[in-house]
Length: 172
Image (tube, rainbow, N blue to C red; front, side, top):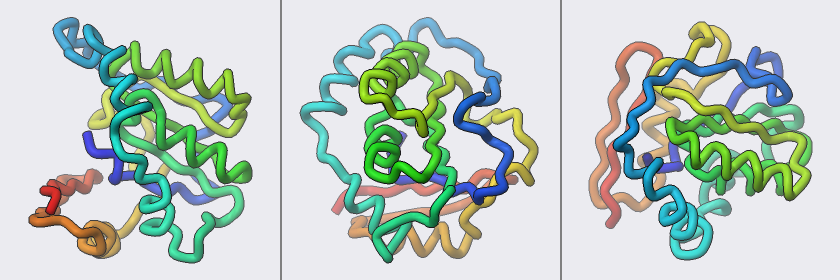
């Protein structure tokens, strides 16, 4: 999953970083992300491009999120961006959700090593979050579309189904 799709939560949102809610998920034992998590971790940490600055500019054009912001990263993998944002902005809370137990375990360990107390990770299915729809502030669909349109994609398609907004993007 592309990590560009993050949702900003308002300071009054119900997701707490200190006690993340369990997320329902059906484990897929044949998942490549479970069997070969170490390869993805290595690539994400050492090989893939770091788009942290681009993400910050896209979400917060002024360069910094409002104090007490809560950020939810869906499909966080090894937590690269969640940790980067939590480390850079100590006054925000970041929650990462991923369906790979191995990647979530790694993300938690790295956050602990870096003493990131404003960052937590849970294993779960991002399409089946237990929180009710009104638990999250979200980008309006028009803002969501504008956010993705502001990036240099060769092609892009956005759509929504219920409470979920999707973007399918092809690099230029």
